[in-house]
Image 1 (cartoon, rainbow, N blue to C red):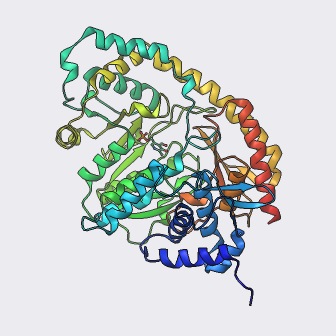
Image 2 (cartoon, protein in one colour):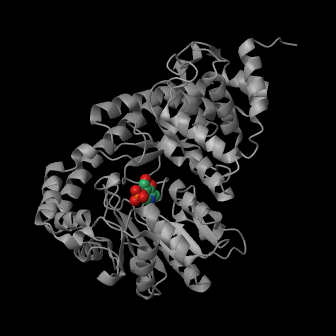
Image 3 (cartoon, protein in one colour):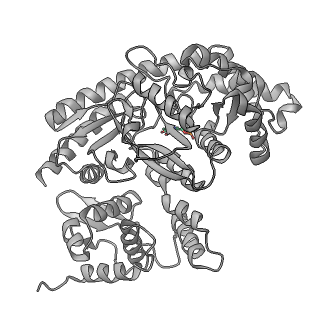
Length: 502
Ligand SMILES: Cc1ncc(COP(=O)(O)O)c(C=O)c1O
């Protein structure tokens, strides 16, 4: 039998100890084990870790588990990868005991304590704390879903905000009632009617703090604990997090080239909510066909279910005619249309909106007030000005042009780098494109190899709730300047070719 090297032995013991956290996924258990070994200096700075293959064999876990763990520890700076020589404990990570604890460590220690102490988190709390979607969202050049904030007309925006404050309308310092600042709701209704074919009167518009908040209100007001929600598979992790928090039963429904395919829903499933992104499916980047739209509307009518249409980035289409909303086809008033300013202005603005069926408007307005006590009227007033003066339309035209060029550039680099190994399958829209990898290529392996080369992309398989039925990469083009896109596109090409050789 092979005699164990000290590092391997240490990791085996640490992993066995950490198994006490049995309610966590295996990669999280391994992650905690390695992290604790580093912080307690059992693993010292510069120590070389075994290869992912060796460690997986040694611990009896899958290679993907080890790859995910290493990827997280590399991203957080506990480990460093040196091409050709392996993975090592980072010098910066090995802070002396009691000193230099990083905020993330302090927070994690607090959450460990919460889990084991007398005031332990609720079961829901444990599920949510484990989710950690945000950890995957650091801004990186070709990381998906990031916009380029440098394109935002900051000066104009500052002027409009200062103007609101200078005018000193005291009523704007109050809570927002009746769904938010009326002129902004009016401006949004006008915009949606003409550009998205949404059937809307001002009373139906509800201003929220973004899509997450809109989805939370929909889940709380339209579904009860244990009700079924259909979600696209693969789909948006942010929506999943909300539905889990509201204790809904999530049933993933597979997406194909025509969008969500209700024919593949579990037999006998009776949805109360159907959440989808029909204009630009997230993450696959396909548009839902008219036949599917009609089929879903029929199902919603038959089941008395509510459709939640997340139209998060429909302004950003780079070819063909703009698509009309699903809500605009709905004669039965079963659709809640959800939009956001996160992608076209900036995420931190935290303003989104819903168009709810007329019969629900009053209930949504009052529940929003009672649950949230919303405010931000001065920002809402500045945004109303921004739209009414035509700045919004000009800004969107500018974004479209810039992002269309970046998408084309990235697509050209990836096509030349990947050839037949990777095919771009997403439509020309949004802020990312999807590359489907040829059979047998493990997308998480490519993600890890790309990270080793200093570039961050997302493996498509991470967006599945159940077993992934496709291997691919979700690659962003919104954030990076064109020269960076070309460099990172090439690095990604190298990572894919390296994965082929493994
Ligand atoms: C599918 C989808 N919907 C909505 C959003 C925006 O959410 P919010 O308005 O909460 O920023 C995102 C952000 O990435 C998204 O990917």
